[in-house]
Length: 332
View 1 (cartoon, helix red, strand yellow):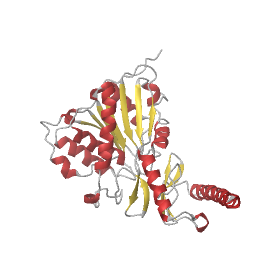
View 2 (cartoon, helix red, strand yellow):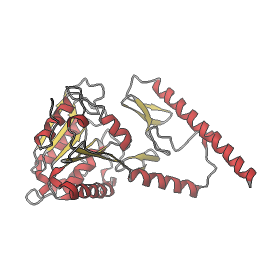
View 3 (cartoon, helix red, strand yellow):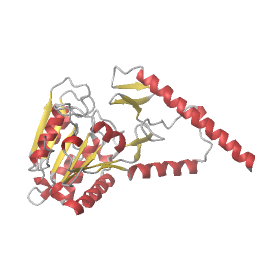
View 4 (cartoon, helix red, strand yellow):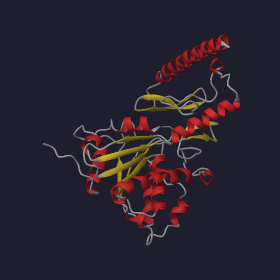
């Protein structure tokens, strides 16, 4: 028995070393092409997020995601049943994870912000708070009375890539996010976001909650807002589009209180992931049901057009949050 356990320990140690070696090798291979933001590599889609490369297809999900089809030397000796249980456990853990930043003093408002596809809450929050306004301050610095909540999407199987991705709902492509839209199931994520809203509203009220998201996070957040039928303190959407457009057209603007929620929508003209045309479509669709979004469109030239525009985009969020009653810190 002791010899068996020793053997398993040695094998586990070797596999851990091999995984780390594979991660380092992958990092350097992708960094070799750091002059581009997106590329095709070994049949998988990769991204550069704030300068850090990440593989989209995920089996072990944290910071750098590993593809389902690993090199032969990383193959597992666990059974298919054990592996399925591990994957389910990982998915559940990610879906229940939230990064929360407590207010620095009195709690006046809560901002619930959803990350985009192929990201996680911890990573997104870190990068989001690196974005600076004109005065080189971050949103975390400017609004000390805000509680910030960043939920993580779970791992969902990608029908197109044949692997698991961190995403709020499965979609076929970002080039045309409406493609195969009938197969996009937003309901589980909508229900979860509404539960988070209800928990925060029990503390400070719906009128003190600002909901938002970037890219796919915004896409599901706007549905969570409208299907909740309650007016919130505000909504911020970055670099996004409107899935299930026909569902939105059925909303009765005279009875749905969510229609009154103040909106800020931002999009770069040269967004290379979600074309600004889809952002315009989102704005127009919301206007058609009686909403009045504040639209901010940014000229080409940003280092990362599918991200928070700096500093102007951060300035726009600061102005919007101030306008909806979120108190900014008082400068000496």
